Image 1: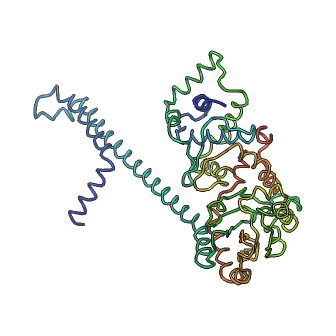
Image 2 (image 1 turned 180 degrees about the horizontal axis):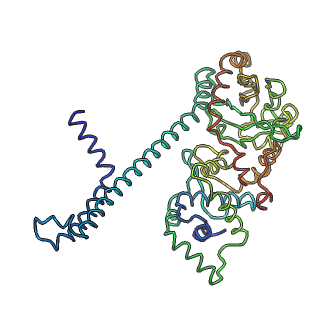
Image 3 (image 1 turned 135 degrees about the horizontal axis):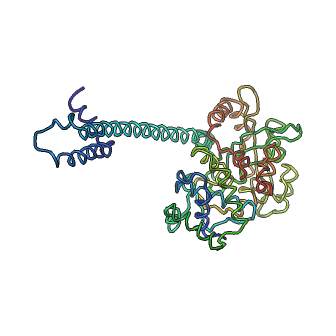
Length: 165
Length: 278
């Protein structure tokens, strides 16, 4: 499981439009990375215990807030230094998932981005307030839901390589 | 416009724009104090007669224009935020129409108890060119007094299984008197598989092991299938089929069709996430 600070550093380092990467967007991107990881690997990438509160997705407060709000340049520089000195903090699979998350979302405006988040299975399949178990939801999604969606002619994009696995 | 209203507007404007105003006045004052430091009192000719006076005047004008432009921009941003907020409220209101209708149906019209549940599903046809691809049902909303039954389940359902499959083919379905899943566990799941076509593995994962079912087609105004409403009860005699048939053959069905149509743009769409790779 990757450390949240490393995931955030990598996201900030790789994100094309660094100026527009708000902490709110960053939080939701981490959720996408966790969900994508759950779909592909059966477990989420970070140890955040995601919750839905009154229909809104939210990581629990506490230390996470500090991570998301850490100064942007420092976070990005931190990853650069890690890379420079060959410190591998994220596996290649984790990096690939984050790259996919960035690639699939960075050019979306806020409304489109939020629509994507609120169309993901863990959110539509849960109640107004709930703690999300992304691992078990992903196995249900892969086993029961995704084949149905594929059956009616909706296919995941194949150009990513990740999506079909 | 009375003086009171005028001051009200002024106060409101100052509240929103005091930062820009202070910045503009401060910039001009800062420049002016530097210039005045080297000038004798009352001598204002420098303002138009000297080069630095002209530069100062131009800077003042630019500062005021900048402040004004900043205020206009801030105002349009505030308006945009207000529009977004209203749209969010509208969205919230629309997304609550159908759950509210089911609440009234359950608690006021049918007076259902803790053993019952009502669910509304939208039918989504296949987008594939393959005629055999079929469609699916997406759970839109659900009403139950028992919080355990209120859980959404897997949210997306095949068109050829269970009550939904039967309603799709026959328009309506009624099925009751299933065995008690507690005391006749195996027999219950055997019958669910036999009568409803739901594999045991999937049936065991359901949030409610009902013993009576009734399902009705909801047609849109062009008589196309818009969705299906399903009534369930853990009590084998918990559903009054006559009452439900009367209800669903009348205005209630039209009302649900209309509400399904209105709430469509605000519904979650799992297809968006799938197409995005999630």
